[in-house]
Image (cartoon, rainbow, N blue to C red; front, side, top):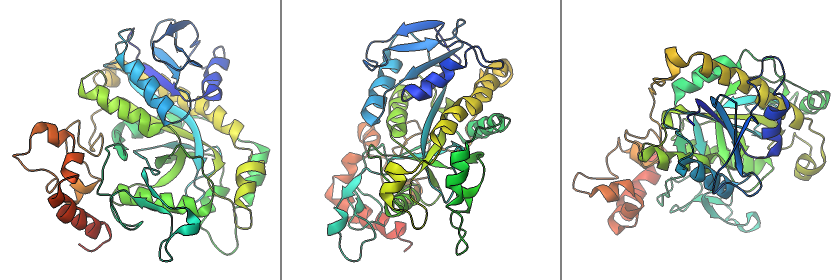
Length: 395
């Protein structure tokens, strides 16, 4: 089977909204028409589901990074599907940063940032001059660029494809709830406009997603991960959404793209806002996370379908004219290592204009695994210090 679009859900409500609308006028149809059991999928979600003509399929990974990586790796390894020309749409809910969006918003991301891949001190034990207990690996302060790179810290997807997806999704009439309207109002303040975006009705936004297995809440953690996103993307990323899977999914995609099993330029990252990642002024973090009726969950689930449907249908209807040949990426796409070719516009390589990390006489295997370079004392001492210096604005 060679689907044109593959929808990636993370847990049951994100998947069920597609199944429940099988007979809704204007829907993409019945995704349960064909069910394919794939070895290696989650025991809870063992099947991929497809339309009768095989043009669109959907799976559920299970929540968290490990589940996502395992399921997507299984999908990309099975001979049951030919995915070389498939467009993938990550379509799930997420937390929202009230500085940049509101409950029910639909965000399309360019960057996915693994914000929790850091050193961590308990906040009660941090040095007095630290703003957070999170410190990039290989660094000595929260605002220094990491010098111990694993390769999954940042992924960048096709900006031109994102623009097309945004255009399609913008035709949707989004869902909202009276509870969400009431909860948003708490973020209005006569003293500051910092949360102005949180008070608006749901819309389509373009900003980036953070990945963390830890489901966190609070202004201090939110601001820390805003700073991490800015730092890791060399100032170009905007943290607005927080989820648990995207970097894991994208790492599996990169590895498959290296062996030409998928086209990494055909990935869309769409998240809808179910809850605020921090409380409004005067609310406690526990109320925000545990007790408040934010009213965003149901609109977020509905908006996966409402915004996602025109994206899927747009790809199908424009297949012969536009999408079969692919949408050319004018930006860098891939991981921090440059595994798919090109020069990352984030990471320490970008700080040196693609120089400094590697030299011409470095073996190909070491180019693919830049961690080996960081382990060399000369690189740790010279490159690491220079990257940190530049990341701190001391060029």
